[in-house]
Length: 384
Image 1: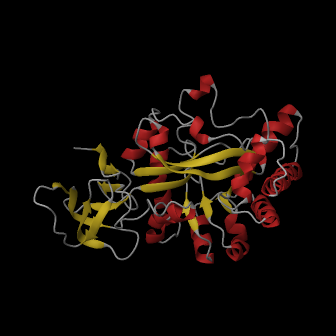
Image 2: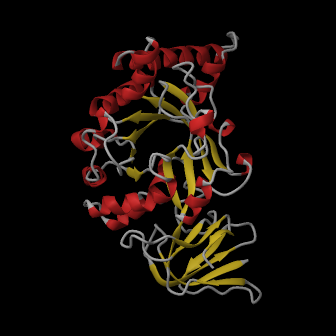
Image 3: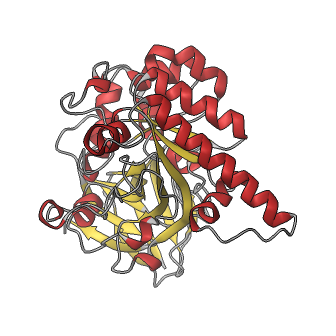
């Protein structure tokens, strides 16, 4: 067993504990959290010495492990751009845990990421939620499949229409391809359920969890009209949806509040690299939150390096988002909104012991990083 003592504990549920303890069992789970804990005499002890202690940060939208620095020569592994519709692609077949970005993320206090295919395709394949420490992706999984990636706007248009003179040339074309696939998948599933034994189709098989409501569509959408198109289509077919990027969400905040769908906001740091980012601002999280939209903050790593997730939350706080909500936007909110809150996102008994002891508070101190990061109760990074 392991005991963390003398920490300023921010559990993300309930009140902060100014001088508290966390007891971790031999299975890497949190056993107890409190001001005082009676532990076995032979327990291993980490003295936090008053430092801030939080759950490991969670990124709801990343591509870590599918695009490392050397991919510029070999070619990226996150876009199967031979076909605009590739739901049969699986993130787990491209994730490379030996990428140095994983160690950097853990040092930055990020312990879980939802990672998967990019946005070149109208439908790109399935995302996975993974721990960011390990050498075999099968042993790092928190949840798989997590979501089915789909994309609107510039990316699929530029990947296919402009260069290959193939559909989609327009936003109408993108919506049409997504609708067609959902129509076919719905009929394919209904025929299977009715015992009609349709000819095997790997693409449509991959879409069945979406049709059944087991996983949502994960919609890359920056512009306001693209965000609303994704909602329109999801409603037509009665499927789940998350609003990823949601760059112009602040322009339609009241409309999005009516829908109750989670918005994964970012990447906001950096220059406006394409036309549909013209209205990008760190004001977006605060405006959406005040309107009642459930929010998380994302990096879209490697667009923003994975370890800078806390920095992005701090910049959102600087732009008006309540600091407590900024913390929740990179911990418990993404955990809940991606369906992994039973494992990560808060410091509660029974959850995985993914814990960060910080050198300082990253919401207020630019130089803050992890002093010690634990994943599943084991030290994954230590400054000592």
